[in-house]
Image (cartoon, rainbow over all chains, first blue to last red; front, side):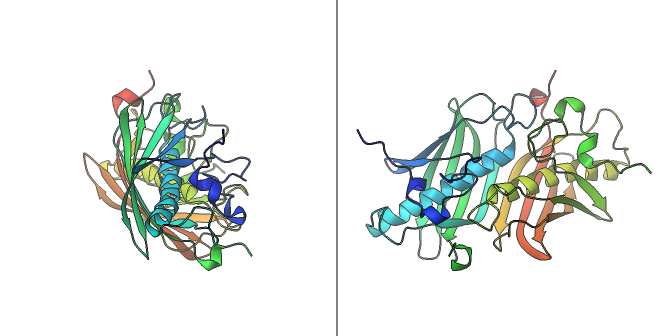
Length: 157
Length: 157
């Protein structure tokens, strides 16, 4: 049985160092996103030190989860929309133009978080993805990510 | 000479564990915010592994900086508005209700980041703060934080 590759596993190797989701960042969070039908899904188990106040996850981690999951979903959604394989060269890599997070419910620590993405719009200039983060079935945060193609100036030569 | 205390140094000890700005989080970022006239300011030197792609800071760190600086500024601004000392009990502690970040320019790694906050509104229900993050004088991101009082359910007993 072949393990399913995440969206982030298809990023170009020279752009796989993101602290949030890069497979080559040894200290990173290694967020991995997959399709689940029309939605995308990622799971993250916060570390004990990712706290806001004892018992709860700090907002920056939730923002990072929404950010990296949204950007990964943008690449995968563009491939789907263009009928393009994820491993077709040049690989697609997006970055965040805009991120909005509404914190709805304090997010408990010690629970695996689930991020579910819905693709709102796949354009030539930008891709919009909404992401809901839940813990044990309770929605804790809702986010909107606007992703754009990584500019040439950010690509490693 | 007495060193100036940051906004976060006045948080109640039992709520000083935030990964972004808590003085008691050994693994945290220790973001510290101060007044600079009417604006608030915080500085952060990203670690080498806080990368998006080689040479640039990942967006989640910038979101965390805006978040913690905005929430700290909300507490300090409320004290100013109410003519209250920062160390008056009960100490004020806010959390993020909403965070918006526009990424304007790729943020270079290896440079100290400066976050400058402007208080937009101090209400009884919420405080709004806008934050600009710059690197070597170039504005890389702009954010808006809506902060609310920490709910009783999040306070450690």
